[in-house]
Length: 82
Image (tube, rainbow, N blue to C red; front, side, top):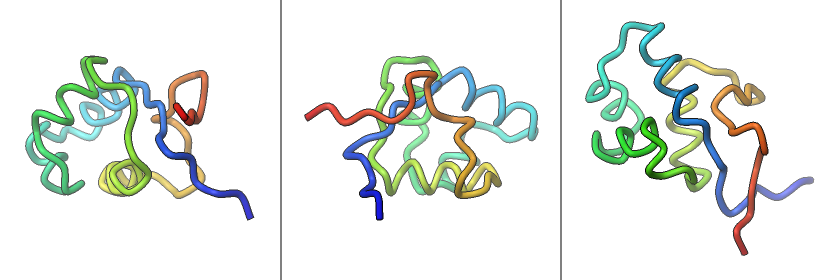
């Protein structure tokens, strides 16, 4: 069984595009994912690029993505900064 990475490198533009295509406000998505609005905003703008697995899974779920859907990952994929 493959262990989850320490963090996931995400594509903020993909997060924003998907959120907007669903007509969801940033505050609503953040609330549904259990993260702060400012954290989500920093992800979308690229100020932050890494998410820990629980937050990543919650965001993916709040956007209605399947567990194996990697639309939110940066093109470099998963990263482990250690």
